[in-house]
Length: 308
Image (cartoon, rainbow, N blue to C red; front, top):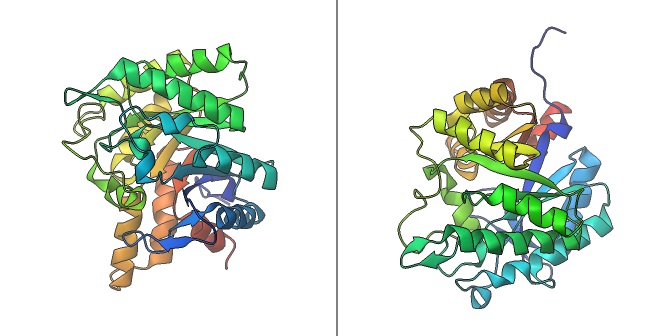
């Protein structure tokens, strides 16, 4: 009766990894219990989580190596794996809120979020590519695009591109305060998208900075974001609260792969109670101010909340 913070299944966004093929299910070694699935098995998973009360998925695809280049053109292929996945999910579960990752790293031979020129990321050319990518997702039926690239000015460009093509109802969940974090390692393992050279510190944020997060977030709101995100979550609870206090739109937080893997590893060693750690972690993220939580623990959390 007096709990100040409560979790519900509707709080969660489940990230899902999709691969080519049929009846394919590969467990991700660094993320026990998480799988990269072919489209047919992905649809089964989506139907199951909908029945559990999870209302949203965020799609990440594994692009075949032979389709990767430095332009990212596979990202806006109307018959690409992402586009086929969007259509299939919306056909199978029309009310599921489908979000899609918008960044070039899965499609890049360099594993970077943007187009590489002379060893650096070409911001403006990358933004043009992201607009093409987003319009392609909208044409496939996406509800919300989730640009995770951290290029300057991309939210305004994406909003303008969507409006120009009459996709006025497609939302934007901006990765507004995305830090250059070591906690992304298992995710890159899942999609084989680790940077081929250098790191992402030239476009992701310095984890020592707090005020910059507010500046970046307010810029995204001004440019037309509908939801703003802080990523990672657990090591950035102070940033979630600062962002929540600064904006009047929904705030999401991404409980990332490394945070998931740490709990899994400690539980496997018997060093902590996994179920208690799941609920305490997710409650702390919501308590900090997150309206939505992208988490690989979504299914586990719903079962625990339902006493199963």
